[in-house]
Image 1: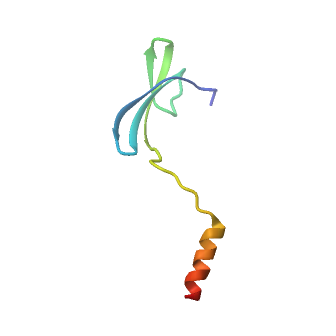
Image 2: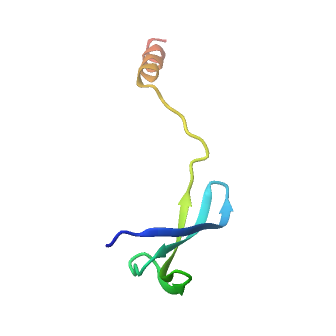
Image 3: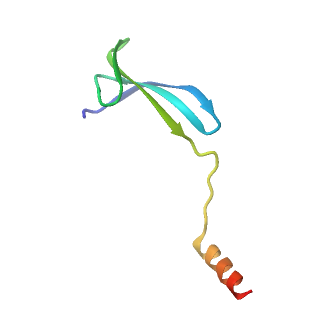
Length: 74
């Protein structure tokens, strides 16, 4: 596939961390979506669902190991 240039991206609908996104790519990319004649010539319109992280956290392996060892000893 040739290099794609993203022209625009819009969130169509959203519920919590779930989103439906519509993207417009410059050029003809039939493996990605629907081909249309747009403002910049031939464009490909792609619709995708994505889940965005609401929050993230880090688990430190040493802390988890110490807590497990303490629980076994008790």
